[in-house]
Image 1 (tube, rainbow, N blue to C red):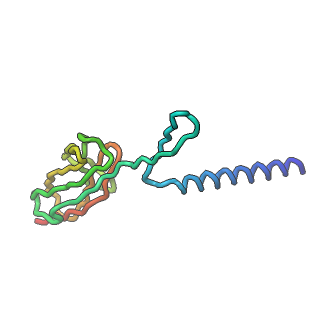
Image 2 (cartoon, helix red, strand yellow; image 1 turned 30 degrees about the horizontal axis):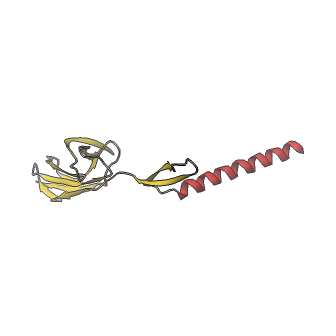
Image 3 (cartoon, rainbow, N blue to C red; image 1 turned 180 degrees about the vertical axis):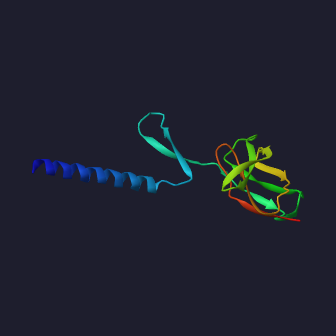
Length: 142
């Protein structure tokens, strides 16, 4: 009987630990990292919120003829000036890096000229080493 009590107590403690961990993880924002900063006296630490990098994107025009140029542009928030931005296209159920890239300006802006010979609806996104943008649809017609 004593062994059964210990097993039950340990099981309850384990479940409580998992629930607590999940509750803490769920309370954290998905797109923010936290860093701790300590006071000059060293007593107590305050949590400081640091925004995660984001990458916006727009594609213009959204419909082009084969090999007609279109522009993917946006802003890399939280990235340093000169951060490399690459273009990726959705092919065969995966993102494939396209032979086009640029770097961000001081303000984080970027603009990439792209051409495609593939007819039909295509999905493009931009990416840095740390973050990828949402996808934009560009339709290429004959």
